[in-house]
Amino acid sequence: MRPRHGLVLLFVLLPALVALSGCSEQPPGSNAANTNTNAIRNANTSVNTSPGPPTIDLRINANARVNGNANAASPSQIARIKEALGVGNIAFNVPPSMRLEETQTIMLLLSPTESAEVLKGQLQNRNAAGNIETHNVKVSGRMQAKLTGDGFHITPVAPEEQRVNKQGQTQWKWDVRPTRTGTLKLHVVLNAVVDTNDRAGTHLEYIDSFDQTYVVDVPSPSPTPFVAAAPARAGRVWSWLLPVLLVPAGGAAAWLWLRGRGRRRRISHFFDAGAGESRIFLSYRRDDTAGHAGRLRDALVARFGPERVFMDLESIRAGEDFVEVLKKAIDSSGVVVVVIGRQWLSITDKKGNRRLDNPEDFVRLEVETALRRGGSVIPALVQGAQMPAEDALPEPLAKLARRNAIEISDARWVFDVGRLAEAIEGALAREPAKPPEPSPLPG
Image 1 (cartoon, rainbow, N blue to C red):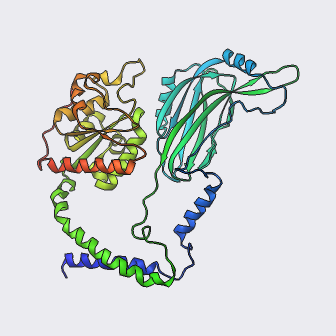
Image 2: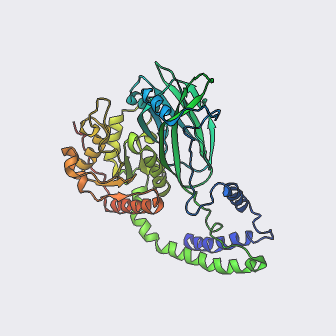
Image 3: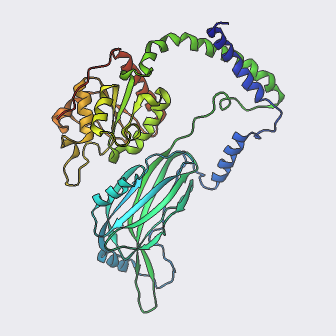
């Protein structure tokens, strides 16, 4: 039997085998997949009864009273106390996306003396997941930070109410695991704990110091082919109806697969080992789009394979020269995808200078080298970012503004990433078979 005929036979018989194995006499809803789905749905019934996508509200009751007696401070007293509080800085990480049932750590650092940039650097050194936010806040001798909410399993790693370290840092830490999917909300609140200490005794007041909401995307896992798409069984009729429906469908799928085989052969050489021009280089700024870039890398790896996608943290081994590795990676890449978030253009260094204006900035080096090389450069806009204007970019990067960008939103993630993948395939198909000549890094 020829290999092609064997493949046709496999695609014809596989759906029938799957259908027959799934038509055994079981009571409705008895399979493991349905049981788990129903368990999760039942667990969430009391949590999310409103229409639309599920939301997670990690909200803290700011200004809640511990003892709740009638001697609590008046609003005017609260305002005077808040005005008299000192000022400090906080930094915390906000994952823009999380995987279902995967635990990530959220950390919050507070200091009355250290700058926001110092705290941000501390979180970066600890490999905090997601984007890092910094803010100025009112600070008292004791502070409270707390994460609660439906749809998350939250494990506090540090006490929620702590005495503030006046000369150093105070840290809060939680292990957070999402238990359902959707476009969710993360609510961060920090309270100053103040003792009014009047003649009637000790009265603790919890004064709102910081309160903000962020969006967290938890995508649905990919369903199992055939089984997830099969209609609900309704008695013995499916024991013969499913094979009747799926066997022709399997044959048609096999025919379409063989028909498109020629097209795949035309581009397959770009994904063979050693075909340098087939690589896809992801350029991004960690402080801007680390979460989105990591999620985008996973999607591209699933489509093109892990050897075809280059991302600095994943692809550079310890001890290697960062600049040299980036140079070789860009020279061997057929497409450079520049991930641009809301802060990509304006983010500054510790001295307040815009990073893109520094000729030695790694992101600038990556984009400048890719543009000078003359290959395909595709801007990918995330977080609702706008394409930078040509006059807002340093002169060596000005040509980036002329490149056609692809917007990738959290609400249309699968569709938009599919458009990006198709653009990458088209760019690779236009690449010459011979690898391009290496281009030196600027400077």
